[in-house]
Length: 133
Image 1: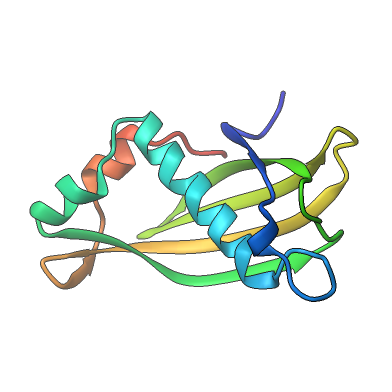
Image 2 (image 1 turned 135 degrees about the vertical axis):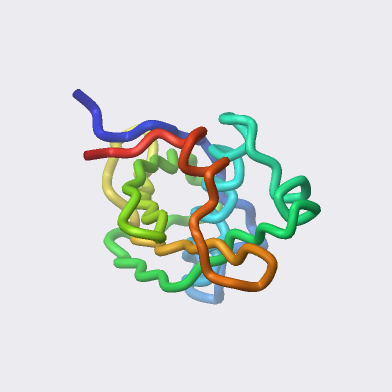
């Protein structure tokens, strides 16, 4: 069984590349963030609505291991699965170049919720998201 619970196809845009002709490292974080937001949207979670309720989901820590650079015009797929560890929601995200599925980057992103400014567990996230065991 595939461990991933969500995937999103994307394409590298020219302006995301540096002078070396490869994607600038900061853009991999953008790709991963966009994937997380699209996943949350797909399960009916709205950051705007959470914020209106006094709940802010924030990144506490992230690590990205770069494996193979992407270049302008490359298509890739961003995949994720997540675990619930105490009050942390840990996203495991991997990017694969298409069509050869060569691993581009691997990320681990720890997120937490601030509820009315205090660290806590968000019932809505816990109930709506799918966790890997």
